[in-house]
Length: 132
Image (cartoon, rainbow, N blue to C red; front, side, top):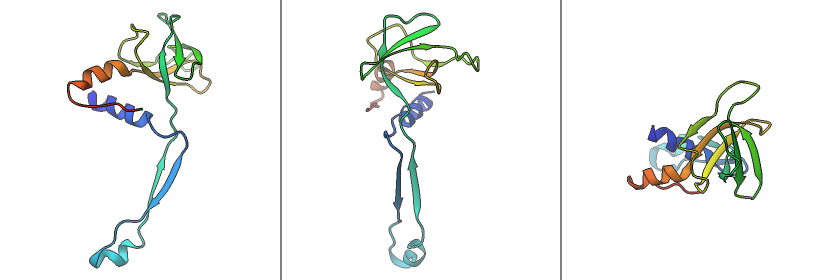
């Protein structure tokens, strides 16, 4: 479970714009002729996570979310079109906790909610860090 949560955080903290870089492997010795033609293409997906904290309008079926940029979003915990419930990792009790969320295409419903503050408290015991 902890490994999965770590994967979510790492995958949600990509850069703002897609990056494409080409890296040619180091070629030394006998492999230099064949390695010169090998190229590795790395594509990094844009960050579609929203960071912030809960607003006081958060209730049982809806979330008021205040982004780090100061915008307020009013989101449903259930997507009306698909009927799918949001995956919530951690508690929604403390409004001062830092959260990372993912929303559906029309930004009306939550897809995933991660209480980053709770994860940091748990992971601090194992010397893990979350950077953003």
